[in-house]
Length: 317
Image: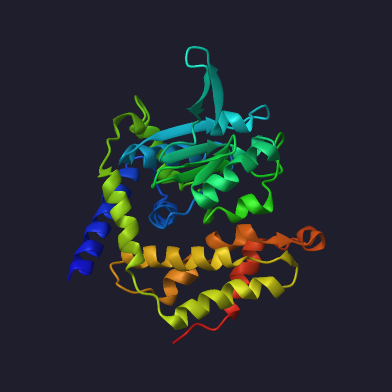
């Protein structure tokens, strides 16, 4: 009974957060749902889409919906790792070095246009995203218990961008996109922003403790051994798929299973079903694949490979 109560309270937290975010984001219910699944499982999200589709607005809407610390870093070619992690400065009065924390010491970090920074600077996030700590001046510094990175990037063929390293991409639980909304929804956006931006009136609707409780509740959602094997089979099938040079790692299996638990909770279930796993297969796995050059030139995409794998791998019954 206690576990059921925690799951119900967590589901209510999700509903409040989603409703609050959708006051700002029109026609993006699916993307908001998956982003919340990443937040609820301790993962991070990479938003890739064309300029002006609302990537930064979505990140800000989430940050303002939670009563937690939020920082934004605008990635540029001249950004240095110390601009993100922090730096030690010599204190003349104390005759010692004092560490000044960088913007990474927060709860929600918006890494805006992450692929405009050099690979060296992009790599500054690797340890933080994977282990929730940073190493500066030979000392390990822990990050907050709730540490969630939302990174945005423009498509890699745009001028002034650097492709993210494979190890960096693997740290993101999901890659999501917003796309263009329907004409009626775009008219609504024009109306909503006629005088002020809806973000200006958005108030927090969940506390830091409630978000952490949401994460705890997700872990209590059951996933059967058969569905764990289904997850592993889906991820494993990418390693031998035609046109794939490097398949998804076991980190993808972990991310897929955990995110499916979150969706099951959002759907009011106490257990995972194949539907949640299939819904998440592409956003969780596709960005981790490295395609062979010949396959890319032939028009084969990582998303297409994962969608084909999801169709072929037998679903447990």
